Amino acid sequence: MQSLRHLYAHDTGIKRLPGSVKMLRNLKELLVGGRNLEAKRRVYQRRSHHIESLPISISRLSLQYCGFSDADIPRDIGTLSNLHDLDLSGNSFLCLPFDFSKLPWLKSLRLNDCVNLQTLPSISNLEYLYILELRNCQKLVKITGLENLPSIQEIDTLNCTSLQNPFNEGFFSAHALSISSRKYAMFQLRLHIYLQSNEIPDWCSNQVTAPSICFTIPSVYKKKSLGMILWFVCNSKILSQFGHFLVTVSNKKPLVFYWTRFIPTPESHGEVSCVYYISCLTSHYSGLMIKGGEKITVEEGPDKGRVKKIGVHLLYLDKHGNVTSSPPILEENHLHSQIMNRESLSGKELKKSVKQRISAQSLKNIITRFKS
Image (cartoon, rainbow, N blue to C red; front, side, top):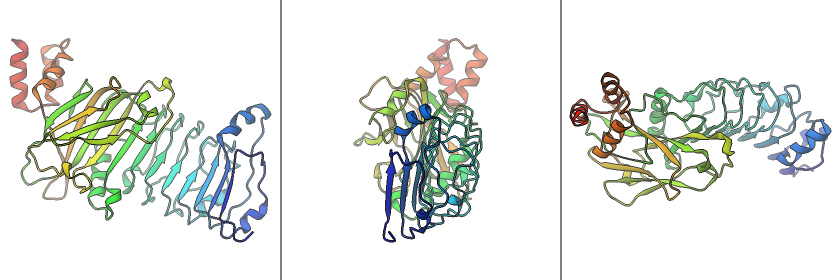
């Protein structure tokens, strides 16, 4: 069958693909395994599939829930130079027995439910990767090369309970620069990240324990606005619905940003973080062509009661080409809310906590009002 291009064998009873698969020189897509086989494997305690080799023409490969250990994964995956999409979700391997150096065109990598996965080869050379899913990889400790993914749009690390949080200010600074240099508008929209965390990091300069935040963009001399980081702490149910949040700039028509594509999320995940980097340079959202002085409101959509906390961090490009940040100016009601949330702190602790998030002048005014 030399003309065969697509072979879909998901959720079938096939236990072994014939060795002649490697002779299908025009095969583009190969899908075997499937979630419906997972229950059967528990009963029969045997592997669902065995694959000796793969044709190099494959661009989409899905080997979901095949029960693969380290020894079962086809070694020649690492040589599939035409591969665009790779899905090895639901397998039992501890590590991948290949690296990504010969997979330059890879655009999506899905390793969800690989509960024994401990290490991941560096992904720093994946220039076109835009989806990375590692949901429920509970033994994964570290991801190497995240800061070198110029096309990345979505990262899912929900329920990766052992993972060291790799999303620091430097990660977003590198991403902000990559977005500003992209050639195609379709890749200039945003980055969204889902991770198992109910806290907003300290480097995120302004935070409120509320479902909305209102602030003014400062006018920064000789700096160009790159974009804003919006860090939401939400009830995990928000990810299992087609909900959205709103960004309103200077009282114009609100811009709608969807939380996610549909992700069924168990309630046991509790509170999770949904982090967005939104570029202020993209022409797709003319309302976000920020110059300074704009009043911006960020709020949850119609599904009320899901957002618990919001953090905002603004990124700029200075005249030397370096990424810097400047704190937004919070509206008075949100500043008052911040103080009330800290009413149990001592005077010194209060000053230190609030000072990290607001300007010196605003701090002086608020402490005076708080004491009175």
